[in-house]
Image (cartoon, rainbow, N blue to C red; front, top):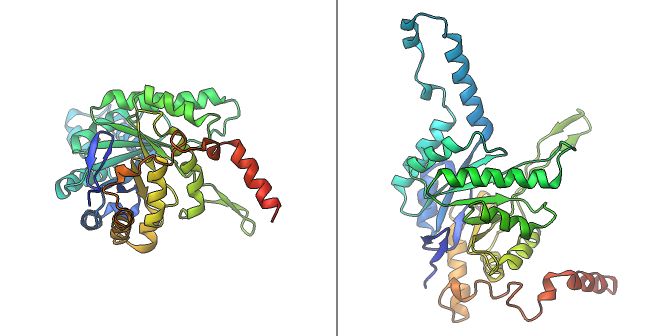
Length: 331
């Protein structure tokens, strides 16, 4: 069975990718994911705030010694001594690329274009085959217009894409007035791939302590519907690679995303629930599904159920929404 796929212009041995998550910090886990058939791995994100914090520490220490004698400068540790987050991340990239034969994708998470460019170059030099920009931005400033928000995304993608030679994918959320148009703007800015969709972790309120608390929930199957919709709409209408993420639990979920038009399917929550060996379940399950239908590769089904390929494209549109409501009301 030929399970090969192409993502960001990179050939993968399977279309199932282990997306960024805590399991991917461990080299042994990464090796096991490769053994289980993962087409690529995305390393955990380094956050813009970590890069900025590191630089603030370095600047403060240097400024503190500005009026000292020259000999005192030798008492400063090297800059990498304070790069406890970023240096470890670069070391992980280097170790992973040396240990694995599958492509290693690095992830950057942030909201501005100012702190990322130099670090993106460092990631490239460390050996990453691609960069995934995870733009996490909550526009809590009510003065920001939708156009301002979109411009921020575009600026980030343009800055990073122009700074490196490796391909850049951007992971975004669905909360744009026109996700399809936004996808086109990101591609114009240099994105070679789109990862749909980011899950914006939302706060909760503890009524007992009157505190706002962070809340992280693993994704579940019902959350597939929104990325499935937009991958189906974008398939065949963008030159960017399409990566599906969110809600992937079974090989059947992988098949659904491929039918909609995804080039690759990413998962983290299922691996956290079931362990890294669940990657083998997904890969083997995809192969078995194809064999049972006398199909030779994922290419045989990719995009078959996309908006532009199905006989009834209204299934993706308002007409189907009305029909669903009417059918439910008639129960």
